[in-house]
Structures are given as C-alpha cells and as structure tokens.
Image (cartoon, rainbow over all chains, first blue to last red; front, top):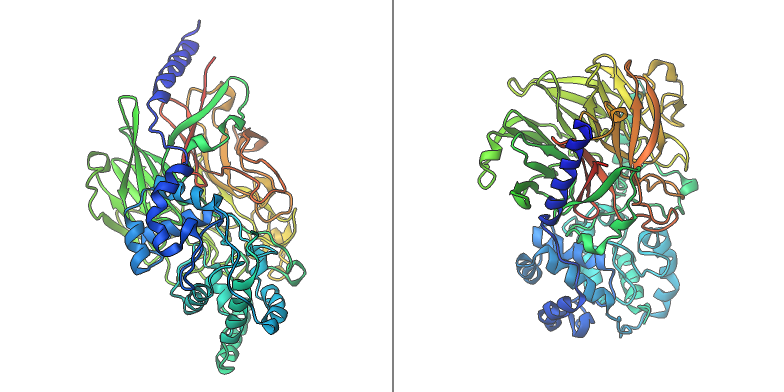
Amino acid sequence: MTAASATRRGAAIAFAALALGAASVAAADRDAGRRKAEVCAACHGPAGNSVNPAVPSIAGQPAQFVATELFLFREGNRKDPQMSAIAAGLSNGDLNDLAEYFAAERPAPPKHRTAPENAAAAPALAHKFNCVQCHGPELMGQQHIPRLAGQQPDYLLAQLKGFKAGTRADIDGNMTSAAQALSDQDIQVLVDYLAGLSSGN
Amino acid sequence: MRDLAVAAAAMAVFTVAQAQDKPAAAPPPSWHQGKPPALGESTLHPFAPNLAGRSAKDLPTDKLKVPPGFKVEVWAEGIPEARSLARGEKGTVFVSNRLSKNVYAVVDRGGTREVKTILKGLNSPNGIAFSRGTLFVAERDKITRYDGIEGRLDNPGQGKVVVEGLDPTQQPGHYWKYLAMGPDGKLYFNIGAPGNIVMPNYTQASIMRVDPGKGVLENVALGVRNSVGFDWNPRTKELWFTNHGRDWLGDDSPNDTLHRVTSKGVHFGYPFCHQGDTLDPDYGKNRSCSEFAPPALKLGAHIAPLGMKFYTGKMFPAEYRNNIFIAMHGSWNRSTKQGYNVTRVVVNDKGKVIRSVPFLTGFLQDERGDPPMWGRPVDVLVMRDGALLVSDDYNGVIYRVSYGK
C-alpha cells in the first residue's frame, strides 16, 4: 500500500464515521401535518376546504405552494395579522408537514356560481394575461404556483388587488408584474370565473 | 449612439403610458423580458426552490452518480436554499441564500455537524467569501465584513461595510452577487445585467473588484451578462468565470460559457454578441463579434453554470489536479432540459481547455418533465481533505464527493 492510498483509506474511514454524525432532517410527514393542521381548520375549514369567501382553500394545493406561502409569512415578506403570527412559530419541518397534508386532501366543489357572461369572456382574458402559462391550462397550479380553480372569490379579489398595488409579496415578482396589466373590470371577471371553476374534485 | 436611442425610446414609451391614464404596463419579470412574439405561447419558466428545504430522506439520492472510485453522500441538510459556499480556516463551512435572507455556518463538532443561522434579514446575501479570519458577505447593494467570524458565530455583530451603493437602480434582474477573494487581496463580484437582454448601464453586466481596505471599485470584465461563479487558475493566476447567456433565442442558442480574463477590462460581448460568435438579433445590428473576447469553452445552451472551482485538493486522482468543477443549475429555457450536474473541465498547463465531461449526475430525472429535476447544484467547494462539497438550493442539502479505493 502506498502512502497516498493509505491516506485515502484513512480519509474514507473517517468519512464513514462523519456520515453518522450528519445532522439529519425528518422526512415530510403527512400524519404529523394533519395534527399540526388542527388549528388551521378554524379559518380554512375542514381539511383546508374554506367556507369563508375571504379565506383561501388550501386543500389539494401543490405542496411546494403551501410551504412557500407559509415561509413567506414567517419571514415577513407576506403579511397578514393572523397568518404572520401563526407562521412565526413554525419550523421548516412544520411547513413541509403541513404542505404534505394539505396537498393530499381533496378539494371540495366550489359553491360559487359564475355569471354566464363572465364564463364566456374570462377564458380569453386568462390567456391574454398569461394566467394559464404558469397556473396551467386548467388553472390547477403546479410546484410553487397555486391552483386558482374553485378558490374563494373574496380572497382572489384581495390578492389580485394586492399584486396590482405592489403590496402582496410574491417569490419572483411575476404576479406583481402580471397584475399591472389588469383593469378593475378584468379582475372582477377573472375572479368570478376562477371561483366557479371545477377544482378537480 | 445606440445607448441614447434605446434610452430615448424607453423614455418615449414611459411618457405615452403615463399620458394615456391607463394602468401602465409593468415591465415584464426580468426572466420574461426579451421573449419574442413567436414564443408567446411558450410555457417554459424558471423553477423556484423549496424555500423550507426538503429532507434528504424525501430525495432519490441513490440516483446520484460519480465516476468509479468516487462516492457521493449527503454531507449536511436543513440549510434551506443553500447557495454559495465558503470555507473558514478553522473548518467552518459558510452557506448563503439568494431569495431568502440568511447566512448559515456548518460546524463540525467532533463528527457531528451542526447548522447555525448566523446572519438573518439580509438583502439577497448570495455572495460570501472568507479570507484571513473575515467573512465577507455581498448583498444586492453592498459588501459587509464580519471579522473574526469563526470565534463569534453566535454573535457576529453588525459587520462593517466595505462598499455600498452597488445597486443604485434597484435593478429587477440578476441583482444577486457572487463574491470571491482574489490572490491580489481584492474582492471580486459580479453586477449582472438588469434583465434578460437589455442595454446595461456603466456598472452593470460586469465583474468588478474592490480593495477591502480602500473601498475603491475597478472594472475587471465588461459585457458579462451574469457571472455567478469565478476562480483563479492556480498555475497562471488568471481569473476564470462562468457566464449565463441570454434566453429566448431558441433551444440551442446561445451557449452559456466559460471565460478567462487575460487582461483587466476586457469586453466579453453582452448585449451585442453571444458565445463569441453570435450577434444578438437586436443589439448586434451593425456590430461585429470580432471586437469581443471569445469564450474558453461553450458549455451548452441555457445550462446555467454557477459556482466553479479549480481542483487544488490531493484526494482525487492526479489527473484531476487543476481541473475545473462547474455546478450546472439549469436548464429551464429549452424544451428538452440538460445540465443539472457538476461538470469537470480539463485544462492544460497553458490554460487551454482540453475537454469537459459530466462528473456528478443524476439530478435530472425527466428531460421533458416539469420540473425535470429533483435537485440543483449551485456551488462547489474544495475541502481541506480534498473532498468536493456541492450545494443544492432546490432542497437545502449539501453533498460530499470523495475518492478512495
């Protein structure tokens, strides 16, 4: 054995010991998420299906989206009197557990009924203003981007107004940018449309 | 003249938008800027990291591949959005954030690695460099020094500003910085182009340096769209850097590139000429690529080369000595994805590139998937024992590649 290979072997053995000492992170746990989510139901409804038009449904949202928004609340990018306070006490593990739980829940059918004229006009707007490019052709969301289909209308309205005003934080500036092109009328039509769309249930 | 014309056109548009009393069309997100009408339907988009990190237990790390004789393992996790890496002289590994606001320290305590959040609330602190006991942190607008950092990880204080005012225009794109300490004792950093394909102002699209004792800035390289990785060739002492080419010119154009800086102030082409031989369809009119420095190597279109290091360790076989390792963070702007690996570039004594070959692979799962990958290499770091660390911001994990028979 050469000196060099002896050194290498020494390093490999040392590493085997080190590997055992690597601080590990728990896997995302859906059942733990279910327990941690008990407090959420008061506003977000059973299993994250909101019955309050001003509060978003989070059942069946992409896991990365749920974790991202909780992260933005916790870090202070996104602000809300209740959510900021709740998120402040959450660890990264909590965020991932909650995300895993809500993503696996089934979204309830929307109660909202879209006016026929808005149902006719909105698909062209969703295309024109690039909604479908990121939120997907059925507006079901993906990765860090939320499902809009079947979302609560007052919540959608407040978010779009916030994006347009530059007061609603987003991770990459895309929604702030996209919302600038929307007139108040466009926003009304889109909200009425999105809130009544099937959420894939 | 062209700068003036573009500026005048931009002002005219601005004035018209104001006069019409309609909602002014916001500038598109910087990554979207320059997308031609023909690609209007394209759904290609950048990928966002899992900001809370993911457990290595939830990742298919068994898919990772290295050449025979090497092995790759998870070295540390729970470092959300792990970006740039820097090594302290007492063995601390510092890790930065880009979208998030923290700087972390990974400390080895007798075989147990502990992750500490040492700095919080910073403004895109992507750039970190360690030198002579001091950690330097480059945020979007300034560079701050934290002296004696390894002795005060739990109380690093406010730090002392080295230079500020680095982002006077609050630029929308490429505002994060890479930072490295040069062999001349000066701090090197990039100021990226403020969008995909736009006319930069005097300080943008550059690599600059600053003497930390004097705070005086100098241009090192111009026409650099965005460099998020550089290092010095240990044999020639030349600065080498990676550069991101523009988007929306198609799946195979232009290449992202590897460059060497043969003299201070060289212009590398942006926004006029890409990859040394391709004129920009707009900004390249009436220009020639011959006036700009060509790349040392074309790395692949949209492959997003980030951190790079010359391998100066002794653990890997001799033929790896003074090779370059590059972390490939992309691609997103092509319909069939490539990259998501660490690539090895072989360079000869004279500083000429001989060949390049993927070294650490397996992050790319489905080249047409969305997302196509489960992890994204950001930076590489040669450890004292010669092992190579690789950060992954998508998951907040650091991997260690070692060699031993």
